[in-house]
Structures are given as C-alpha cells and as structure tokens.
Length: 186
Image (tube, rainbow, N blue to C red; front, side, top):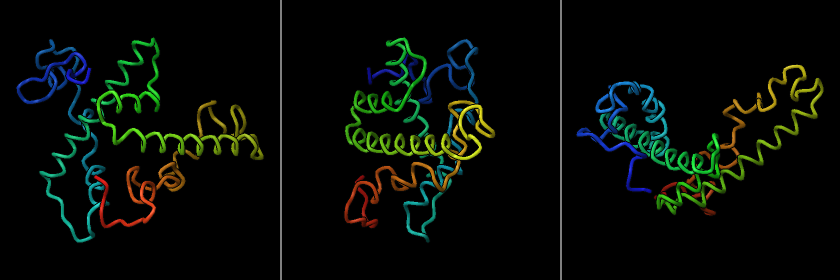
C-alpha cells in the first residue's frame, strides 16, 4: 500500500497528477497551492522553536519544509482514509492515523502518537466533564453550550493537549526523563 500515492501517480514535477492546476486529471479536481500546503508562517514558527534563538531560516528552507510536511500529512492521512473507506466509515480518527504510521513503516512515530492521543483524550474528557457540571449548564443545549461535540475550551492554545503533553510530541518533556533540550531524538 505504501508504494502508491492513493491512486494518483506523480507527474513530472513530483506532485500528484490532477491535484494542482488540473494537470493530467481533466481539470475537474483542482486544489490551489494555498489550500494544499500548510501556511509557511506556521511552518517557520515550528522550525524556529527547535533552533537556537539567534538562528536564521532561509525562505528556501521554509518552503522545502512546507512542501515536505504537507506531503507527509497527505500521505499518512490518505492511508488512514483508505482504511476507513474499506471499513465503510467516513471519519478518520486518531487511531486510524496511528495505524497508518505503522502500516507505512513509520514505527518510531507510533508509540509517541499513541501516548499523545491518550493524553489528548484524557484532557478532552476532563473538559467535557467540567463543562457538563459547570453552573449554567455549559453542556449540550445549555447556555453557551453549543452543539454536543463542541468544547469551547478546546480552542485555547494555553490549555490545549500540547500543554499537557509537552509542546513537541517527540520533544524532551514527553519522551526523555532528563528533559535535556540540547539534543533531539530525531
């Protein structure tokens, strides 16, 4: 499964035919580059967090990383989506993504992803319980509660799952007991 691009052969530019500018696909499936790639400012910010404060990152490096991480996400998500399609499900969940990492041979990512997913679910469960027991309802249908799956607190970056698990999923605070940030496991 890992040797195909989910039914889309690469074109001469390394991009999948039919995805950008309608090349090779009849033009009916056109995705703009800005919709296909993660925002470069976000990519640059993530890159900068791992570097020393005085380090600089070239535009070329940011664009290269932007292309790579966007393709990586598409590749893993496509594999997870194929699994869901075979199982006649419409929603890709975190377990499907972990399965895809394993199926694609990204063994080093599976355990950290499972730990992160567990911490995320615990945090979301705590939020749901707090919202349901708070004065004024806070739960589904209550004042300010919103739809059943809506958790207003989940949009806060300060209290998000990354705060509980350490900012980087594979970073020092989660995977290494010595908490030494001078060297990285990857």
